[in-house]
Image (cartoon, rainbow, N blue to C red; front, side, top):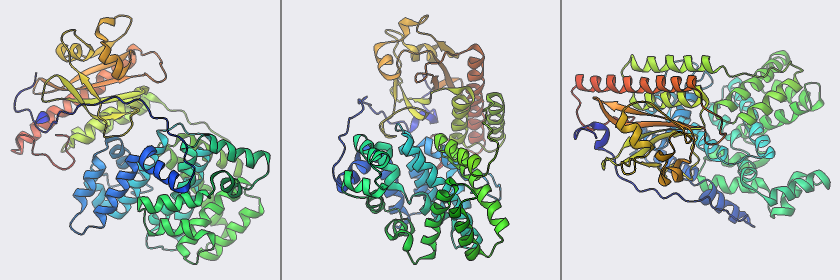
Length: 513
């Protein structure tokens, strides 16, 4: 089905994938037990990422290329990292960064390390079913981190970003616990709400340890860094001024729960005034702006529920009129389309192009699951290259689609026709083989092959298998448009490589080939 020398299949490695039902993990009973379960059972991807990055940055023989390779193993992490790296919060110079390697050079490996850890951490916890308390913890951590960084900047701190990350991860034990706990969490909440226990006393009674201790244990296991570990261990009485900034960030978020007229708030303002020598008016303006910024950052990390909590706090604390943001899909489609055209009109980064196309389909149309798969060397399977919204045990588990002609299935039909295909169980029931149903379910879906030199080499698939909302003709047209942009980009990319004399699969670091 593909030409023998097509570069897209030169580096493809056949890999069987076993679909494993989700495991039910019993709640641990000790600090070591919780540390083990969170590191090895609930968040193994984050554990692997954290330790790999630590090893790279502590090895003088390794540099940006090795760091980029760890990040690029996870397409979702790559997309999120590049998006956040290009925001004014991290990139005030507005110099566009379209590759991971460029981001490392522009921002610095240490900041990228910290940012990657946070993106990977949120990727791990937000894939679970967050509870109300978990989202409260996440909201508080992001909110406090923005305030701490702002004060660090005013003090000319050597690395405000390090303060930001240390604050964000200061409650990592609480966040991790509340994202994955069950009955133990319910018992803690009961003690707090009905028996007037303090939070720490309730944790101690139910768990036998405080969640700050779990944070210290996880920080050590994940080798998160000196300031993160010191701020967790030291508590608010630390003599390290940078650790004090971390805890001041949390003091501010607590004070804002009581409102800007509260005594707690005025105490925080006085502390900041003493540290920075800024006027109270400037400080209060910054505190309000920081809260709005925190809500935006939460959205960028994908923590939308936490963003709503911060936005609500902004409204309540500063007595502002609440405005519910509405996502204009047409506007979003236009913006992403412009991004795609910008990528195509320049020296193409094929990874970024395909990631942007997938994001256009996923967010611009509002799909639950979107995936780009490449044709395997056996010409009978499609192997996941990048995906959005897919609920998997880990990024190492790659989704495989069979291309069966006897009997013909969804993927054979889409591939052999070479045309965009809107599959409907009610109309195309015979194309949904048992294998297809096992992998993707029996849902309406959009499929379209991606071509290289008029030969199909991959396929984009998208559905709404989670919320089961119906698909429309207008959405199918939008899907076709974005998929066709991928085809145009692959063609231009192929021409650029030919013009530069590159042949075969000798790829750049950020290359999909």
